[in-house]
Length: 525
Image (tube, rainbow, N blue to C red; front, side):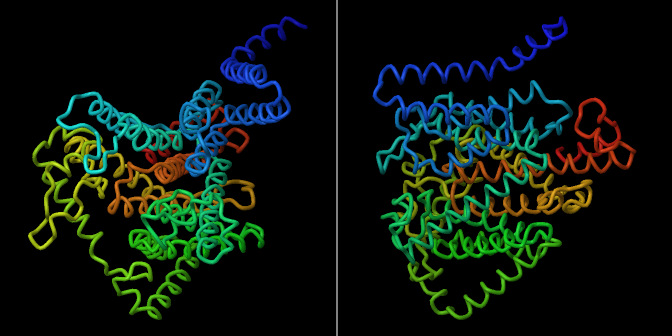
C-alpha cells in the first residue's frame, strides 16, 4: 500500500463512518435476535440481509429514503408496528433526515438556496413548538368522545414532517432521477388506491388488501382506500390522476407505458367518484378545470376528463342533485351545517385570543365548551365538539393570528414560487442535452406540483389537513422537488448559454457562475 493510498483509505472510512455505525447497530440487533430466537435463524438471516441492504440504499440516497417514507406513510394502517417503538413511517422519516445529513457532507456541488422559505418554515415550526410547551386553559382532548390528542405527535406529523420534506425536496430532490421517482410513486400509490376502490364495489372483494379497505362503518357505501378515510383517499387518487395524465402525455415515453398511465388516470378519476365525498369531487373538478387552462402541452387528459364528467352529471342529473349521499347526491346539508358552526366557533376563538390562540391541539375542547352557531337558522348541535374543518381557521384558533400569518406565508411563498416556475421554466427536456426518454421534468413538472398544491388547499378548506399524514407528505415533497428542479433547469440552461459544457454541470465550484446562480435563486425565494 502506497503512502497516498494509506491517506485516502482512512479518509474514505471516516466519510462513511455514520453509515457504518448505523449498519453496525442493525447487525448487533440481528445478532441479538438470533440469540433470543435461535430456531428462527433462517428467517432472521433473510430478513436481516434484506433489511441491511435496504437501509444501506436509503442512507446512500435521499431519493430512496424519501420513497421509503412515502410508501410507509401510505401503508401506515396496513403495516403493524409490532416490536417497533413507533410507526414505521416515523422511523422512515428519521432515515430521510439521516440520509440528507450524509448527502450534505458528501455533495459535490451547489444546492438550491432555501432563504426566505427556510426562515418561514423554521418560524412556523418554532411557533408550533412554543405553543406545545406553554400551559393552556384546556387539555388537548376530545371531551365529547373521551379521546386524547398526543400533541407532540400532532405537531410532528401534521407540521414538522411535511414542512421538513418541503425543504428536503427543494435541497436534494430536484434532479431528474428524483423527479421521475416521485412521479412514478404518485402513479403507483394512486393506481393501487384506485384498484382497491374498484374491487370494493365491483369485486372480487377477496383480492382487496388490506381487508379493512372494504369499508368503514362511519362511512358506509363509500370508498375509503388504504388510508381508511374517504377525504384523504380522494386526495391520494387526485394526486395519482395528475401524475398519470402527465406521463400519458409524454411523447418520448413508450406507447405501452403511456397507455398504462392513461388507464391509471381513468381508474383514479373513477375512484374519486366511488368515494361519494363532495370535497373529493370538488377537488378533482377544480384541478381538471384548472389543468385544462394552465397545462400547456398536456391539456388533452384534462379536457377528456372534463367532457366525461359533464356527460356523467347530465345523464344522472336528478340523482346528482338529490340529498341521497349513497347514490351520489350533493345536496345533503348536515355536513355543510357542521362546518358552518365549526368555522363560526373558530372565528370566535380567534377573536378571543388573537395573539397566542388557545393552544395547539385545543380546538376540540374549545368547540365543546365554547361552541357557537353561525346563525339561528343553523341548529346549534351541528359540529359540536368536532375538530376544525378548515386549515386556516383551525390554525388561527389554536395558534393565533401570528401562527395563521406564518402558515399563510409558507403556503403563499410555495404557491408563488411554483407559479413563477411554471411561467419561467423551459418545457420538458428541450433544455436538457440528451434528455432521457420519458423525461417528465421542466415546466410540466412545475405545473403538476402547482395543481397538486391547489388540490391540497381545496381539501384543506373542508378538513384540517394537520390530522393526516401521507397526503401532506406527498404534496409538500412534490412542491419542494418542483421548486428545486426548476432551479436546476434554469441553472443548466444559463450555464450552457455562457459556454459551460454539460460535463461541468453539477460538479462543484466549476458550476458556480454568479449570473446564472443569481437568476436561478429567484425560483426559491
